[in-house]
Length: 437
Image (cartoon, rainbow, N blue to C red; front, side, top):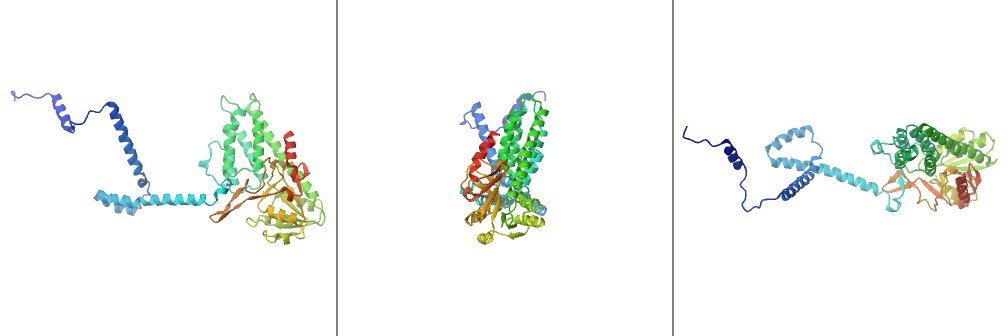
């Protein structure tokens, strides 16, 4: 109609907006911008806390198909039934978490706290390895963790050959030099991975220190190709001199110490002892007899007995360490191989070696220890608990077994190295001589 006034469109919008807003309390004070920001932060923190509180229920395993079909109408019926279904599903992830915690606690409680400093070999997944770890080193770590590569010299040689592949595959980044970049960014991740798979033996530690020293001596102006060739040649020379030639010399020296009529006792299995006895019989034509005392846990001595018997040697096999005085009664020499020699002359060898050597010494038998000089260490040990490893296959809630033991120098008659024969007390003199070379 012409007489009626039409309200402006702007006033109509303003009226609707006021109706949509809740009525404000006149007693409430108007908040400032700072107070509004503070309130918004508090609301956000409350929402995060609520989300975390509901997270365990959401991590529950999904129900089976028939359970989903049965629960769908229940959930749509009302919130009470939906809450009951969620509560019934919630204990399942909690029970799984408790079981994982119990297994972890049980695992850590296997080894008493007083032995917590001892390490144990373990297999790492590829996701746990650093991205810089070379595939050859990854494979080597898995072999070491499952003891497919056992004795120290074999582990040392395999490590050096793997590091050669790492050096060949290395490319120096722009603005860096090989001597300053390779050790910290490439070499150290390889070493850390191998040590995580299984604790490094003393020979590996000595060789890695030597390799780092050679890298630090490289001229920063030397081209990468020449530097890598130089390092690979040094590694080949190291393997040849400190492992291959050293083993050959030691085998010859030990074989010449065998005389006709000897009854030689060996423990478990080691390639140096086995090669020395076969050479003494086959090459030097010595007539003697061998008694093989085996490791009662791993039975590796059976392979030694078979190898010596195949070479034509008369062999007696003893399956364990029981009745050692009777077993060693007619023997004349004990020939043992060491994993390492400490600076105080103590011998670090396979667990059980100390038992055989101690009984032999009390019976007046001569004890010959074979050890490469690369296995000599400046550390000192007076027991088997300072430096050792826990056998992962013999570690449970009832107890655990150590892989090595330590024999004091007073029980060792002579030590055979590639440098000749010496007494166990002369280890420090040999170490000083090696530093001069």
